[in-house]
Image 1 (cartoon, rainbow, N blue to C red):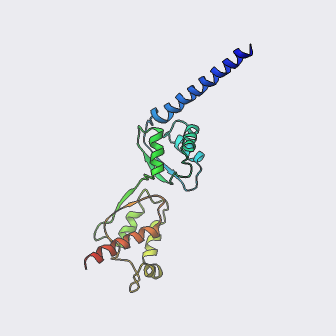
Image 2: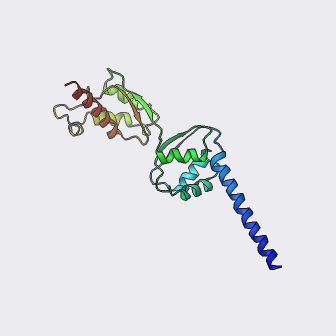
Image 3: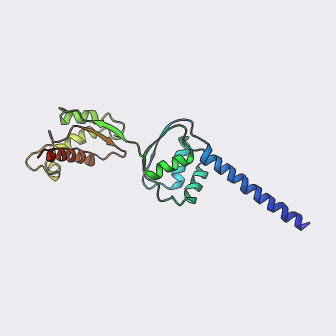
Length: 196
């Protein structure tokens, strides 16, 4: 009698492990997202919270399975923050690879030759990577603030008018205005110095 019970439990355990393995495989490698989604993964989020965000956006079928997969692969501290665009048809493995490699969404922003700092500020405020409605005013204030301008290497002028290089820049979220202005000036300096 006890031999039959032990045999029964052994078969039940094997069956359970096989069932879980099949479900796990189907969830991570076969199931595909049905629609595209954009998800922002904030810095410092736990794997559990990231899993919930992805499941809420219908990028993955199960937050628990994603959580287990990340931990089994030892990637809990290797997921990168940022805003991600997930196309329809991705598997859970594709999603994990994207977050691990940091393939974050980049927004193009073009500064047209001849634009003034006011033109840049106007168009900047309409961009999807900008979260603050006050960015236009903040931008104008910074590019005309003598201390900030001097920190960027322009001590003989009180404004960056004419020193923000026209080009297409790829911007990520979260958007940091100081860094953005620094990139524009850096691009100007690079092009200017290459003319020598």
